[in-house]
Amino acid sequence: MIARAAPPMRARAAECVERVHDAATELFARMEGGCTVREDRWERPGGGGGVTRVITRGAVWEKAGINRSRVEGPLPAGAAERLGGRAGAAAGFFATGVSLVAHPRSPMIPTVHLNVRYFELEDADGAPLDAWFGGGTDLTPTYPHQDDAAHFHRVLAACCGRHGDDLYPRFKAWCDRYFVNEHRGGERRGVGGIFYDHLRPGDGGMDGDALLSFMAGVGTVLEDAYAPIVARRRDEPWGRRERRLQLARRGRYAEFNLLHDRGTIFGLRTGARVESVLMSLPPLARWDYAPEYAAGSIEARLVEMLEPRDWAAWSGAAEERGAAIA
Image: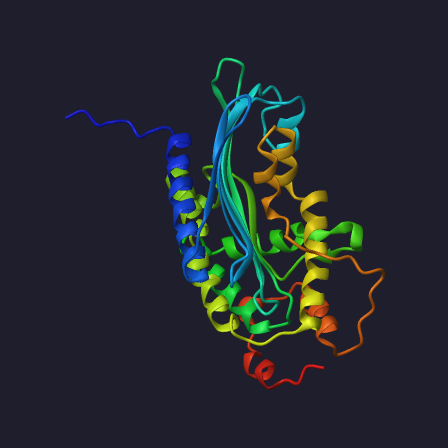
């Protein structure tokens, strides 16, 4: 019997992306408790396209977007270097990935983001020059529930640990450095998570199959990392104060996505569908002028909580439950 050659990695990555996209759609629809999911299929001028699924005006999700894309075509001048590719002479690219952002209605539920992707660069004849995996997920709370951050990070540490002992510490530190509003004096967007890019076969002892398995693991980690947080926070009471803080933090979120986020910048520069690229933006946000928060207030405690720490080793859940927050 003649052994069949494995499909090209781009085909296998695209299949993985489709499975992750479907699983994420099912998860967020289930957390909503049943809803209509709008689906838009789009084509990109120059090659490829995608599928965008959105939940809006729900009881749980004020806006949740789950996007899948598979795009290819000529590479704009200098784009290979901006992407971090090793092939300066690259003439074309292929990219496939899932990107999701969920903005909850309740300020007690944190916003979540997740992205997994696969890139290839090729020469003018279509021969591969470079390829890598990237992705990650991070949590952006409005209310300073420290046990939510600890749970999220512990699940991520376990997910990474199934693929390599050093992955979580590396990618957690990378995330802490990446999701930063530098123009705001280095203010963090949230409590982090994991972030990685340019993972090639051989990195961390992983071959292509292992990297693909890691991509699938990260892509489906929210079932354990995020859904339990939603379940325990969705019925907690909140009022105008919490809503005001939520909208202010959404403003910071929008600033990062428009000024610093690599995926947003790449999508806009390569002609992707604008509505899909900008689906990560919240439906409502606010920008107060030079806000000041009283020491010990929920607002001040939240800002303090955004500073990087070893959340996976955090042991103060009992203290937080008993704490009186101003």
